[in-house]
Amino acid sequence: MMMRKAAKCSVGFLWSPLLETFDFGKKHPIRVGRFKMIHDFVEEQGFLDLPSVRVITPEPLSEELLRVIHAEGYIASVQRISESGVGEIDIDTPGFKGIYTNARIVSGASVTGVKAVLSGEIDHFVSPTGGFHHAMYEHGGGFCIFNDVAACVYELKQRGVERVLIADFDVHHGNGTQEYFYDDPGVMQISFHEDPEWMYPHDGFIEDIGAGAGQGFNINMPFPMDSGDEVYRYAFDRLVPKLIHYYRPQFILFIPGFDAHYLDRLAHLKLTTDMTRYITSGIHRAAHDYCNGKMGAMTGGGYHPDSLLWGIGTVISELSGAPYDPPPQKAPFKDNKETWDEVKANVARLEELVFPILGI
Ligand SMILES: [Zn+2]
Ligand SMILES: [Zn+2]
Image 1 (cartoon, protein in one colour):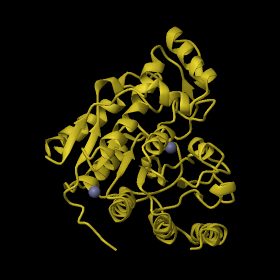
Image 2 (tube, helix red, strand yellow):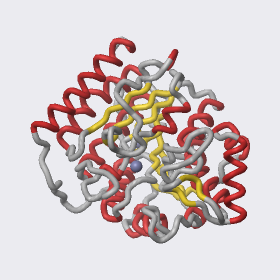
Image 3 (cartoon, helix red, strand yellow):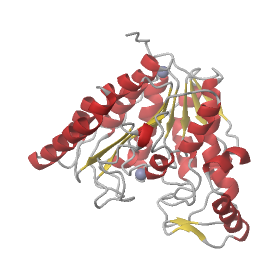
Image 4 (cartoon, helix red, strand yellow):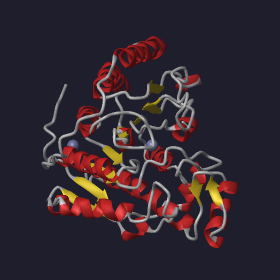
């Protein structure tokens, strides 16, 4: 198999001060100032001075694409909340004045990245607000208003891309995105997440492997509480390379999932940024092996400022080839026998359910 050395890739960083126009309130995990903090960090680290990294201005999600991914009634309700500033998208997703415009720009950023990759302007994009994987056709939720992952898939489909891989390592299951493409073999979704038995959004069980022609193309790998780097790497190595090799995607949408970090308080996995490096490197290599490097990272999740920035730095470093090292980290636990037993059983169950269908 051809392996291109990935040190000289060009990366588009989607940025505009308009990304910062959201306002979920001061006590919300996505606080005002979050994306400016990310931008300033990326700038301070010198990434924006690299010849291989360029800033790309996001375009708002087109109304046409918005109407493909969301129901008229839902769009109208977001517009109403946006005009009055009254009401909420969901219990954990407050409304605010201007939310419609904000949601179109933060989701449009990822689609802008897709277009820039397809046009050959850049090899990879990084969309710092992207990855709204909980939004569904008829409603939002889980901090997500418009599903940019689905929007990217439809944009890719319209441009003739037939096989899209969604590699979603956010600690929460990508339930919205799963629902859009559950019976569609044109999309393979691999989601690694904390056990939905207790974790939001309480969806993403191993048995949910897709339906109809899409059977076998939806892969849910749940992890028990306190899972660390070792069990996570085991599951990744056992599942991901084989699935990607089978699928031979033409474009990869990658959600690195900084909220699986041990510092993150919204969930209970115990990964370090070493795992972000490992996953990003594996997915990046796969993008060059199978799809001429065509991939984008949506890095919107992550709720502890330190692990969030370490993650962003690591992803941009890996994709651009520029050096960056987060501080050394030590997870609070080592994987114990119970964790190992459960992860091994989950991997074995997935192999048993999915691999025969795909002929792996
Ligand atoms: Zn590359
Ligand atoms: Zn999450």
